Amino acid sequence: MSHVAVISMGGTIAMAPSASGGIVPALGADDLLASVPALAALDVPVRATTLRSLPSPSLGFADLVALAERVRAEIADGAVGVVITHGTDTIEETAFFLDLTLPDEVPVVVTGAMRHPHAPGADGPANLYAAVRVATAPAARGLGALVVMSDEIHGARFVRKSHTSSTAAFVSPAFGPLGLVVEGDPRIRGVARTGLVVPVDDKVGARLVDVRVGLVTVALGDDGELLRRAGDAFHGLVVAGLGAGHVPAGMVPLVAEHAARVPVVLSSRTGAGAVLRQTYGYPGSERDLLDRGLIQSGFLDPAKARILLQLLLASDAGRDEIVAAFDRYR
Image (cartoon, rainbow, N blue to C red; front, side, top):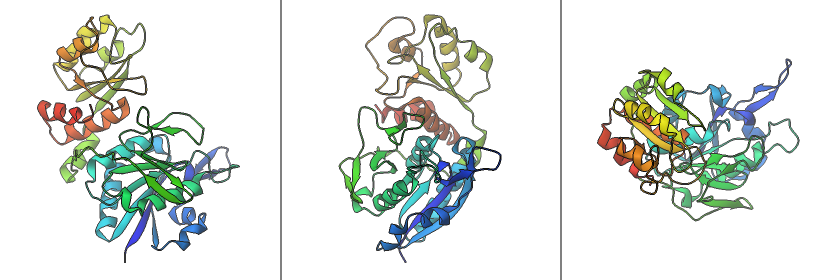
C-alpha cells in the first residue's frame, strides 16, 4: 500500500529537557507523529521509523549513507513521499547530500524545529505537517530534496540556516523559496534539481568516511597558517574566500601549492551570490586564483561545496569531472 515514510534522525524537534539541564534527544518518530493529529486525516497512511536519535552536529557521512539507503528502501516499498526529521544545525548539508545521491522522482523532504517540543510556540508539529503535505504533492515530484520550514519550501542547493534561533531561520539567498504551504496546501512554483547525480554504492559509501575534505574560511590579514599546518592531511579543500572569491595576496602561493596537489574549490564566505570569474585581476582575486588551478563553486556555499567535493572524491572523479560538476552550479 502506498504510504508516506517519516524517518527520524533526532535534532531539536525530537528533544526534551534533561535532569542535568538543557535539552537532549528523547523522542522517536512515533512520538513526533502523535504530536500532529491532523496527519491521521490524510488520504495516505504515514509510516514512522527512528533511524537515529542524535543532535545533528554529531551526524557523519556514515549516517547519511544509512539514511539514503533507508530512503531508497522506503521508495522501493511503495512510499509516495519521504519526510526526514533532522536537527537544523546541519540540515542543509544532509538535504544537499540526498539531493545529489537520490535520483528518484519521489519527493524527499527534510524538516526540523527551531524550538523544542516543550518550548512555548514549538514549531515542530507545524513543520512536520507541512513537510508531509509537500511530500504528497504531485508538484514536488522530480524537484530533488527539499527543506520545509515555517511553511516555506526550499530547494536543497539553495537553502541556508541564517539565524541561530528564529523560526524563520531558513532562507534561499538570491533565489527565494520554491513555494509556500498555504492552509496546508503546497503552492510550488520552481524547479531546483540540476540533473547531477552522484550514486553511492557500497564502495563509495565506505570511502566517504575515509576521504577528508577541509573547509578553510579566510579572514582579514590571514597569512594561511591554517593551510600551512594542514600539510597533506586532506584529499581536497574548500576555501571560503572573501567577497566574490578572494584571498589576501600573502596566501596566494600557499593556496596555489595546495591546488597543484589536490582539488581546491573556491567559494565565498558572504552567504549569497556566485563566485565571480573575470572581474578582479589583482593577486588573490578570483581570476588570479582560477588561473592557478582553483575550481569555482558557483552559487554553492562552502558547506555544500564540501559535500559535493567529498562525494566526487569518494567516487574517484578526476579533475575534469569535478570541474564539470561544479559548473552545473554557475
